[in-house]
Image (cartoon, rainbow, N blue to C red):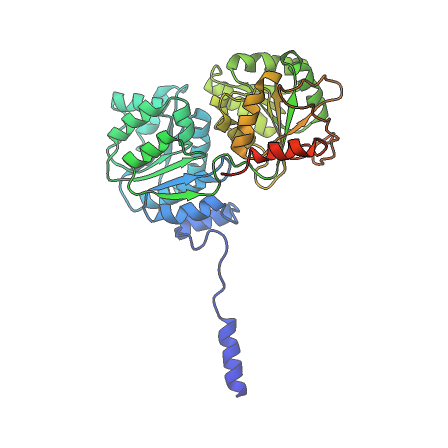
Length: 436
């Protein structure tokens, strides 16, 4: 009996233990070793769901917020697929900055399986790209316009694309790239794997998926309008002429890294100059800057040379920087979804984030539309030295008492209607944002 009991205990001790992390997702051993070496310990939700589907060769639509690790979710499967097939991989992105950041991820993994990549974007000398193309790269990361230039000149052929990725697809449509994307899809083989990643799912993308994809599996880790939970959101209602004064006060109050959004490149230039005159280190990134200037601004922001980066939406899609403490919407975006994209730049990798928006009195409708999208009210605060304006049709808002740690000088509280408003108003306002 004792021998039998000992035998059973030994068998139990040898029972296999589930291996955490990226193991079990269908990733090749060499790539797993690289992930371990680079200290990628635990896959993000989009990686955990998307990688097995992508490695199996199926078409896929991935819905996730920005900053959730989507690049790894398609880079690893693409490299693994191309290791067994002779063709190429193509990744289409909306901006130059995003193209460069995506290519950096491929540079970490592709050489392990004997591949290299090329970046084809506007604003760069095409001669350098032609030299890179002569080395026969297996992976192409490109913006739609520059890729079509190469295709039309015969310097790039797309008839051997094995895997196609459309990254930040919603943004590409917002920026007017739909005609170019449709033209590119005419050049690539029908028998291919297609992966589409997007933060939202507008009708245009649904139509594209139905037309060009083969029974795609849908992976969704966050519904449209979802914001990162650990981001505190605040609104200052301020008259337009007092925005610079309020900005100056907030820059003196918060000393962390700040990504400041404006609507136009003209605003970016003026506000960057104003911030510099206030004595703060700042850089700007928008469509009027050369690629070299944009690279320098982004790298300077990452390394701490610039504490503040002023950006327009068109340029900010490629800004993937961990550790941004504050996102400040100096101007509200033109569309509500961009609000979600903007504030998603803070609060990454489990760190606390802070999103501040300036709203003028006549923008009450815009604010309410954003609140409906994110399904929650945003706290309205004020600064004691700057006169607060009032939104049309809303009762006076109380001043914030601060109390949130993590930022120099404190800050306002998190989401939810201010607690000292009348109960009837708070209930009415909250009911507007319930999921239907």
